[in-house]
Structure formats: C-alpha cells, structure tokens
Image 1 (cartoon, one colour):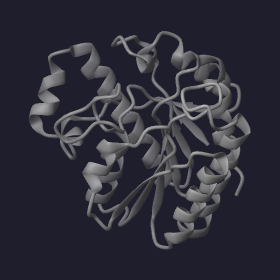
Image 2 (cartoon, rainbow, N blue to C red):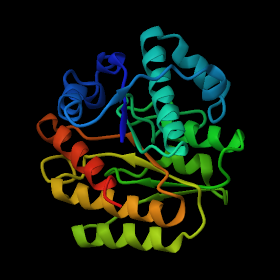
Image 3 (cartoon, rainbow, N blue to C red):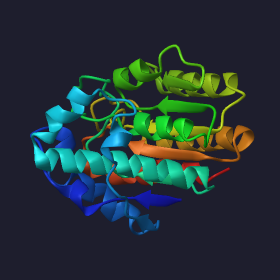
Length: 252
C-alpha cells in the first residue's frame, strides 16, 4: 500500500469543510507512520478534458491557486490508479474531492472529478477494459454517475443503507454480482462515521469495508484496487478511519 500525497493539498483554497485547515494533517499524521508516501504530478489539461467540458476547465483557471491544487488532486488519483494497475494498492490522499463534479458543473466542495479522470484515462490508453467504481461516501456521487451512466465498461455504485447491516449487505451484493472487471476504484468518504455527518459506521467498519473490497479485487482482478479521498469532516477521527480502511484492504 502506498499513499499518494502532495504538500499543496494542505492549502486552504476555499471556505468549505473539505478545504478546512488541518483536515489533511489529521490523516497525514496517522498514515505517515504506517505507509510509504509518493508525490504526484498535476494532471494535464488534456487529462482533465477527458471528462470535463472546456468551459468548465477554463472557469477554474481564473483562480490560479484553486486550479493548481485541483489539478494536483486529479494527478493524485491518476497516480494511485497507475500504481494499482502495476500491482500496488494505493490511496490518493487528495483534495479537493471530486465525485460531485459533472462534465460541465460541480457542487459539494468538488471541482474536477478525480476518480472519473483516472478511470477514463486507463480505458482510453487501453490499459484496462472495464472498471468498477465503489462509492462509500455518505453522499451519492452524482458527477461520477453522470460520466459513466449507460456505459458497460465502467460500473458506478454508491453503497447505501440506513443501518450498518444494510450497508454491508449492499456492498457485498454489488461486488458479488460483478464477475468481470480489471480494477476497482474506491471513492472513499468517511462522513458515514458515527462521529461525522452520517452517524452510522464505526472505525472498525471501515476495516471490514476495505477487507470486503480487497477480497473482491483479489478474486477477480488480481487485487488491483485504488482509493481516492472524497468526504469526511471530523478531524478527530479522519486519520483513524482512513488507516482502518487501508488496513482492511491489505487483508486478502
């Protein structure tokens, strides 16, 4: 397991919970003790335009700091996906998040859709033929769903459930129903935690979530799986939850 991180992700580029001061530190401090870190390059405009409209990209170029950090976030997701294809599980500890970014619009603290660009680039380059995107964030990734709706080469699934049991049943049912894919990308939001907005999952539940996803990847696609950070806003538990997920993913 490698963690993809850039110091610029620490920058406060906007006034929203995802961009809050100290949010990345809470995860960095926990993960640096357990995993090697690798630094990404920013995504190119060509990469971003794989899924976004030109006018969407140009809109954010008017804010140089935001554009630079958001391009680095896309680059972090790309790097994590490349590591996974090479056989190394990876976690993109990136911000801004991305799953609410659509081709020409965005909301929910997102600007560019990090995981969508990463997956689309793998497909366009002929590296993979089919991907699953599993979204465990509290909120439905409407942007990601819009990119891949109706396509057979990318299957997006937002895990739902009003109880912990429902959540795990939905996750298992989806993964067991898919038998043919080359990689799993995980949109990892930690805002379902009992101490965060969703008030549902425990820290140990993230370990179990990681284990279930990793085992599915092990059965079908030689363990090729990568994770990209989305939500999660309680700084006191973010690091523990991220580490729990990665710990579970190491169990095959």
